[in-house]
Length: 384
Image (cartoon, rainbow, N blue to C red; front, side, top):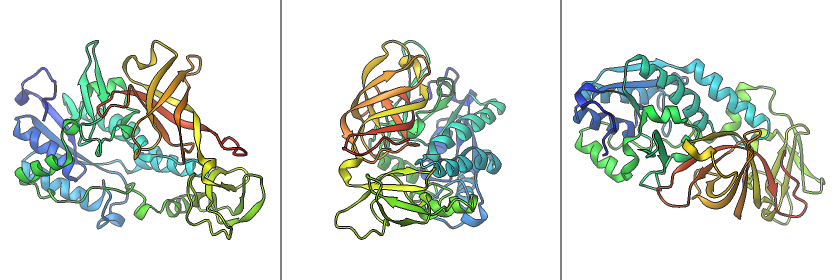
């Protein structure tokens, strides 16, 4: 594991570790403790821990808080549990619901990192007179020749989480450290066993923490009881093919659950919240070549220089960066992406993360929220 690139000796350096109760953040705490750093563990309670005590595949509640406390006790480090439920509900869950109601496909993990972990928790770490905040994310951060730190894809491409961290600001990067960015996951597991951590074999979190079993519609219906507005399912020409119980049950690219008796496979092409219509069509209608972005975050000198430049982009966390042409609008801060190869299933509300190239350890230039998608297929109108 690389050093933390800090000027003081380890025993003079206080590091706050964000401990989720999983193996990754526990290994970070254990290794930094072993190296002689003054480690303080902080765990955030983000949602109703009573209802999620025994849930698997989640984090930041119930059993996970208990596991983080056990690890801290074993490592003999101070450990605090902070109740961030109200902040999390306002900044993440409520925004998630509003985005779905607007026909978008939000990514709450991006907003959680932006507004909870790297804003509120980082401020708490400074209050504790920490020299940095370390997390268990698989992403790399390295000093840049011109000053500051750059954000890079992790060594292990299968574990890389840079897609979820593009909204981190340059100022936050200077205070953050990601010790696992240069490690493969199997090495992290080995280190957990070597450190004798009780969570060494604990399963990785998979679901969005506040969405049990991936059932987004249930969460939204609970938060917004009037959200399930019925409407028509129509084809690209506007012909009614069926009815639905609310657009909150659908996402762009979805095929299953349409309950349509037609002769060809149909996919959700776009959602129209104002008219409560779900527009479906053939898979070819999902092909996208041009994407408009706003809410941009640029890192380092990425926002300077040429207005147009070749880059690589990811429109989903599960996809590898693909070549594209970036055009920045310096007047309003928006950007346009022209994909070299069309992508399927791109939806407003998702993140588009921009990299310097397609390499396995490429630098993150920044990214933004997808607000408009221009489809290729004939008859597939632009998503609002």
